[in-house]
Image 1 (tube, rainbow, N blue to C red):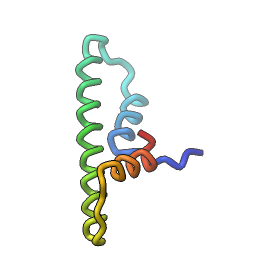
Image 2: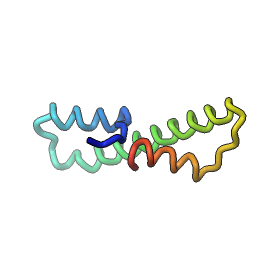
Image 3: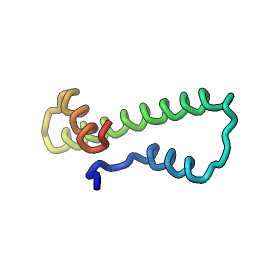
Image 4: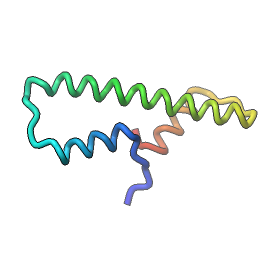
Length: 76
């Protein structure tokens, strides 16, 4: 069993995949773009929250630490 957590966007994608029977092929590129935008926005929000939490504890956070935190928590 994986110890990685799912983001809200990943959960949404999985749930939609189980519940939607058919999506026309001509819509897939648009859907992929929307999903990628949502993932990027969510990753940025998670990173900002991590930096804010570290800052509130009096710690300085480097960008590489944010990326490492995200990757170790969500496996991206």
